[in-house]
Amino acid sequence: MSVPIGAALASCGSAGPTPAGGGATGAAAGSGAATYWFLSTQPQEGIRKASVDRFNAANPNAKITATTFQNDAFKTKIKTALGAGQAPTIIWGWGGGGLRTYVQASQVEDLTPWLDQNPAVKNRLFPSSFGAATIDGKIYALPCEAVQPVVLFYNKTCFEKIGAEPPTSWSDIMALVPKFNAAGIAPFSLGGQSRWTNMMWLEFLFDRVGGPELFQAVFDAQKDAWSNPAALDALTKVQDLVKADGFIKGFSSITADSNADQALLYTGKAAMMLHGVWTYGSMALDGGDFVSGGHLGYMNFPPVDGGKGDPSNTVGNPGQYLSIYSKATPEQKETAKKFFATAVLSDEEVKQWTDTGSVPIVQGADKLLASSKDAEWLQFVYGIASGAKTFGQSWDQALSPTAAEILLDNISQLFQLSITPEQFAANMNAVIGK
Image 1 (cartoon, one colour):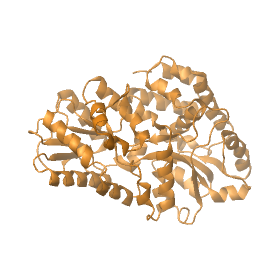
Image 2 (cartoon, one colour; image 1 turned 45 degrees about the vertical axis):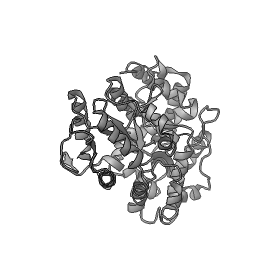
Image 3 (cartoon, rainbow, N blue to C red; image 1 turned 180 degrees about the horizontal axis):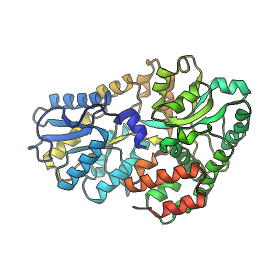
Image 4 (spheres, helix red, strand yellow; image 1 turned 90 degrees about the vertical axis):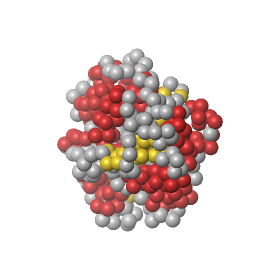
């Protein structure tokens, strides 16, 4: 879900690469002197830079040079650097499909043995965050930073108007649709022009109907995985919702980038919205007293009747990820591992994340959230993320860039009812593993 990450992490302000500490940026930067590339968004850039500065102060003989990039420039630069054998020691990323391409090209280190030898490093992080870091049973990246699940938001006032309670099942959702429509309220807001917003519906329906193994089969490139009967059931259910006028009229021309979908929720024109937790801050800022006045409700996506998925499961961005370049020197790799063990999500960094309204992927971080003005919300997010049996990564990050673009196009067509579930499955089966 590259755009949601962009909303919280990758809407960058600098014009290009900016060394945050000076010095060389290649892998051969000197014995023990490591390099680290990451995105240039604030406040995230400042938090990352502060961790590097703290590490360098404590390790003057094995310093890390940080270089920042805008989102698109970063993706291009890291691909070029890896191909040229000049990648940084530490590679920031989203895990999933991008990480898989690194692994297939033997460009990043297998961290499994190191984590086995240092269980405290692994055990302090959310177990669910390791899914997007794991390829073929081995861990190739350290989860870091903050968690961003997708949740079901609702407008309490809209529910009061029709005398209804929030849905506790898919059947409830379908039963609420005609009631809200009869009251002149759209059941769901959706910025469908952005495409990835539609994708969140399928991510949850696939999980709730068939369990996490349903999409895992796609990720593992199993032949015809999209044609699984449970997948076709989930695809059919979302079209059932479209046909029932479950979404705001004209949703396919509404953009999420402008926050128009959020405005529909907080102005009461729509009763519910499935979206990432990154929207909470902007609704609090732009929605008047919608958040501060207690009109906003939120919950995990409800179960589907008869479905196999655990109702504690969630989807979204289970974390961000740090890998070690396989061609870095042994000394540089040791510096990177020391940085992972002592600086990444240190107590100081964790406090910085919570101070910006984010939930770091550290066990026990909920204790730091209690003093926030948004404590109830942050503890809800913490509970969703830490309690998830499975935290499914956004599909457009889990798949390769090629497959992700075709996926988004087909999801848009599915929501516009221009293709059938069977046609969707056939189109996607054709690009499995590409």
